[in-house]
Image 1 (tube, rainbow, N blue to C red):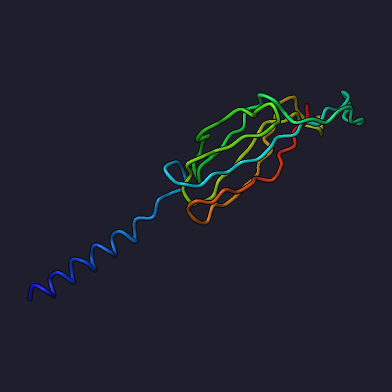
Image 2 (image 1 turned 135 degrees about the horizontal axis):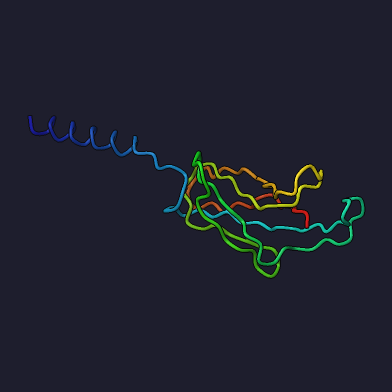
Length: 132
């Protein structure tokens, strides 16, 4: 009798633990990293004048299906950035760029989507290229 009760408690506890899936976000052991490159064009965006890695540019991350920015960091001297301690899930990484179509004076987000599939992953985000 006690053995059956013990097995039932173990089975129930196991099912509860397995069904508690954590959402994308902080609290994990994975990281996303990458670089931001700047392309500097003339005022009509017809001539590329310079290209370099962005310093002190804000890079933003959205966790999963969140409706707003979840966190942000600034790029280092070499254009690199990193988001640490992330759970498995889908992430949207972006930086703002001038609109090369000249349709608006507003900045537009250059978005890269990447998925962490397991713990302790370190994934490189494809290079974000912004226009200055």
